[in-house]
Amino acid sequence: MALEQPSPAGLDETYRRITWRLLPFLMFLWVLSWIDRVNIGFAKLQMLADLKFSETVYGIGAGIFFIGYFLCEVPSNLLLEHIGARKTIARITLLWGLCCVAMMFVTTPGLFYVLRFLLGVFEAGFYPGVILFLTYWYPTERRAKVFGLFMSASAIAGVIGGPLAGTIMTGLDGVNGWSGWQWVFLLEGIPSILAGLVTLFYLTDRPEKAGWLTPEQRALVAADLARDAAALGPREHRILASLRDVRVWQCIAIFFCIITANSALTFFGPSVVREAGYTDPFTIGWIMSGAYLCGAAGMILNGRHSDRSGEARLHCGLPALIGAVAIALLGWLVPISPALSILALTVAIVGTMSAIPVFWQIPGRFLAGSAAAAGIALINAVANLAGFGAPAVMGALREQTGSAATGLWIVAGFEVATLLLILAFVPPEPGALVRRAAARAAHEPA
Image 1 (tube, rainbow, N blue to C red):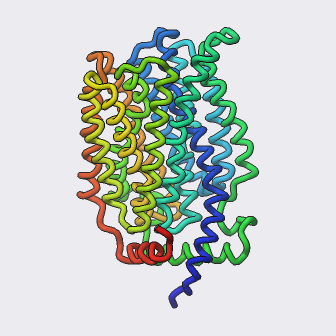
Image 2 (image 1 turned 60 degrees about the vertical axis):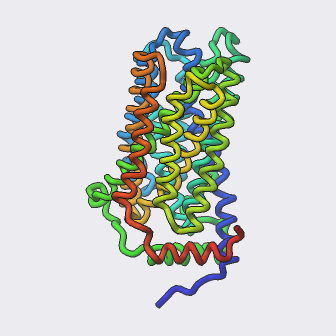
């Protein structure tokens, strides 16, 4: 017998309450995570000269984070499925904060590599863990917008992180005998330590445990998620089967291409801005801030439009293509026009980041339960190896050629492959999902 349809207004009010309870806090954690992960890109502006590190040393250190990330992603997500998001996310946040603070004591390439590797180990599981956690609370036709809101926090981190790092580096350089880059790691790591402790008391693992929802609202969410599962049809629940599923590896290939571009822009964006002629760290921070603010808007708007249309393939692939064109132009424009270089960098960030939240709609169509925990983590873990390869290659090429152009053109080629792989491997959306999205869009304000 078909499940009775609740009133759209009742569902919308319930999901609004869930969103206001969960999303601001998760976004805050993601801001802290992103700042602590990528502040090395700004610290680099002083750190390399102080420690006599080469561009190659920096590229390896920036990227080795993703090796630790790769090794621990799947175990962390399976642990989350077993013990819950609250304990898992608290542990992750506390440990990455401690590791970020420890970065201020780096003096040798070896210690640099070890701490960046450990940062990846400690942070592993946060991003895919939150993706999995949100699937416990939202049905398919609401997820792209929610994913976009959550992931836009990385762009917000870019907005905050650039000026913050620039201000710390210029304002505190030399205070207490420490360089500005050391103050960056100290002052940006402490909030994560405190946030890890708060997480233990704030997060709720699943809707049925949410005392801040009424019994009627908890029942509404349970029924809506059941209808969503019925619309998706049979999905894989077995862990080992999901890891062997060819569709998981197709998703890995797609996300690998997206992350190649995203990590290159993240770790070398400040250097590209400096190469374009803007040398002051404070100015570089504000330029990157504006670019990431546009990226945040792109993630939210593209995710919302994907939800309303019920379409995910092209909402992922076309922004990636736009980002690829901009990255290719950036490699050509840097030595020619500072203003056009900044415009191309901004478009590249918008295109690349807008593809990410919609991508995560794809695995949820064929994975559920423990299989989703393992599959989502595996996709993120293997694809994020691009986060090791891209900075390392970019650093080596920049050192050999004196320019970022060649590396950017290679990255643009990977980003073009995103759309080609999607068209080759990802089937169109099931009709039931499109109809659910259309029914929701009909009563939702434009």
